[in-house]
Length: 216
Image 1 (cartoon, one colour):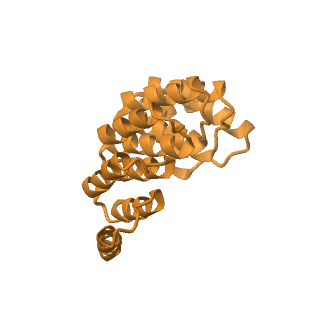
Image 2 (cartoon, one colour):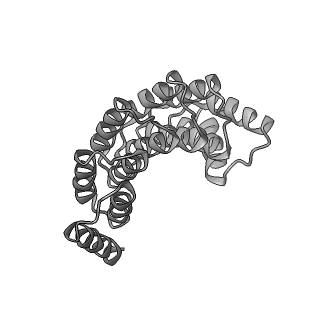
Image 3 (cartoon, one colour):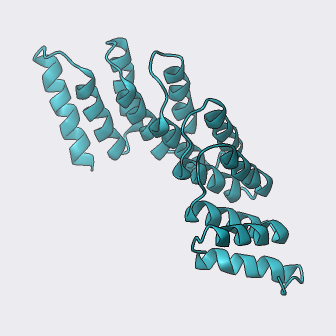
């Protein structure tokens, strides 16, 4: 809440004025508080100060990236990810999730599609949550080809598609009028014994009906 981030910054200021050495955990707590309070600009300022003090660690970066992602600052989130990748710190799943979340909230389908490929090519762990954010980002902009591309990328990784991935993709393909791909995904989903969401099911029926494929 607002009071929490203000209190966190107050304590951070007291530590600085008291000549208490500002370590990474001090910055991390303040940045996380700013993220929860929606103060991404303040979070970025604190990250810069941590970086200048040479105490920024992976948690510091991830907290700042998460703050940018939650507040629809996808460019800032990816810029921080790039800085982190070129530092001694290793980008991890939390970093990828935060950056992809920024793409989803901002509707940056092209960046999301590129990012999921980079994750796999870099041999980073791709999880279902990150993949789903990419699918939603592409689906929101009716980029059904990119939705299928995300599924193909997932197949190249160790990430297993979950119920959310299938439902998000089916909804996107159905809305795009791609009844054949929609039905194929439904059948594949049944093989995984995953539960088809009511909205996704209605989307499948609607797509088939529009193309006179009621028997499917």
